[in-house]
Figure 1 (tube, rainbow, N blue to C red):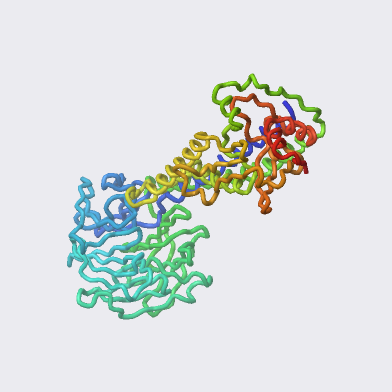
Figure 2: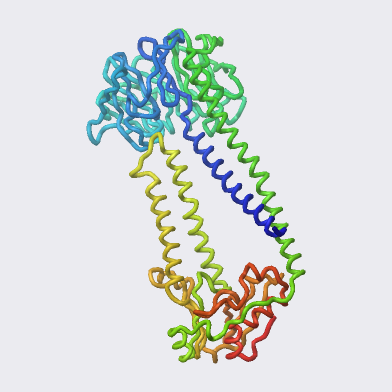
Length: 580
C-alpha cells in the first residue's frame, strides 16, 4: 500500500469519525433538551405532595413518605406541560394530550385515570407550554397566568373563559392567593410583583405592586418567577436572570418588608416554591433535590421519600451521562479534525512525491474496429462525433455552480434524515405531527432526493457534449423537468468559425482532473471543457483515468492528453491549438 493510499484511508476514517461525533453530539444535545426538568411540585388540599419527575408522578405524605408512584401514561401524557393542580376529590387538572400547541385542560381521576376534557367550545382556554393554575374549589373558579400570551384569565370549572386581562403584565409566570379575592402575580419582564383583584367583576385590576430591583447582588437577577404565600403570610419569591436560569430564593415578611435571601447551593436551578402548612418546598433541577425551609427561613432536611430520592438520582445520572457523551464527542472532534488536516497534508505530500517520480505514460490507442457499431458508423459518415455522457463535463464557472447546487442538495438528502430523527426525539413527548416541522422536513428531504434523481437521469438521458462538422455543443444538465433552472446554468453552442483559438491548460501541480481546454470566441468570451471528461461512444478509453493521471508528471499528462481523440478532433478544426 502506497503512502498516498494510507493517507487517504486515514482521511476517510477521520471524516467518518467527525460525522459520527457530530451526530452523537447532536443526539446528546437533543436528548438532554427533551428531558423534563424537575422544577414543579404541588400540595393537595389534604397536605399530600405531588411531584412529577420524568414520566412518573410521585405522591408523598407531608412527612416525606412515599404513598404512590403513578405512571403519567395513565392520564394520556408523558410529562406535565405548563402546570397542574390537585383537587380535594382526588382529581387532577392538567393539559390534554402531548401536543405543544394549544389544547384544552382536562380533569382526570387520580385512581382510575379517567379524564374529561374541559372544552366548552370556542371560548375555552387552550393551554400552551407555559401557564400557571390557581384553583378556587369553593367558588368553582380557575385562575390562569397564561405566560406566553401575556394575559390573566378567569375560568369556570368547564374551562370556559369568563374574564381576560392582558394589559398589566409581560410574561406573568405565577399567581398566589394573598387575601380574600386578592392575588400576587409575578410580572416577570416587568421586574415586579403585582397585587390584583380576583373578583369576577374587576378581575385583573391592579391593586398594588412592589419592585424587585436591588434584591440581588447580581444585577441580572431582576426577573421574578415563582411566588408562594406561606401559612404565616410570608412571601417566598424566586428571582432569575434574563435567561430564566440560576434562580435565587427570597423571603419577604410582608409586602413592604425587606426581602431576605435564602442561601442555596451554587448549582441550583429552580423556579417555583411550594408552600405547605409548616414549611416551604423548593424543587431544584440543578442539584436534583427538594430543599425544605421552615417558615422563618431556616433550612430543614431535604424533603422526599427514598423512592423519590432514587428517582431524582436516576434523573441526575441520565443528565450526567448525556453531558459526558457530549463532552466526549467534543473531545473527539478536537482529535479528529486535526487528524483529518494531517491526513490531507500527507496525501498531498505523497501525491507530489509520486508525481515527481512519474515516467512516460503508456496506454492503448483506440482503433476503428473498437467502435464499428451501426449507430457510430452512421454518425461518422455524417461527420458527427458524440462523446460519453457524464454528470459534469465542464471545467467552467457554470460547472462549479451547478456542482455546488448538486452538493447542497446532496447534503440535504444526507443530513435531513438525521435532522428528522433529532426532531422526532425532541417532539417525542408532545409531538404535533400535523402542524409540526416533521412534514416540512420530510417534504424537503423528498424534494432533495427527487432533484438529485432527476439530475442523474437527465445527465444519462442524452449526450451532453458533442463535436460535429459545424462546431461544439453543450446541453445543460438542467433540461427537461429541470428546464426552469436552465437560465442559471445554460447550455451553449459554438460554430468552429466563431472560435478564435483553443488553449490546453493545466492547474497548478498538474493534477490530471484539472486539465481543461479554454475556448475563446471572437467576442472574447471564454468557455472551459475538461480534458478527461468524456470519450467517443463505443471507443475504449484511450486517455488516462483521473486516478492514474494524478500519479504522473505534468509533461507526461499533457503528452497523454495530446494522444486522445478529443484533442485530435479539436486540433483538426483548430490547427493553432496551443498549450499554456
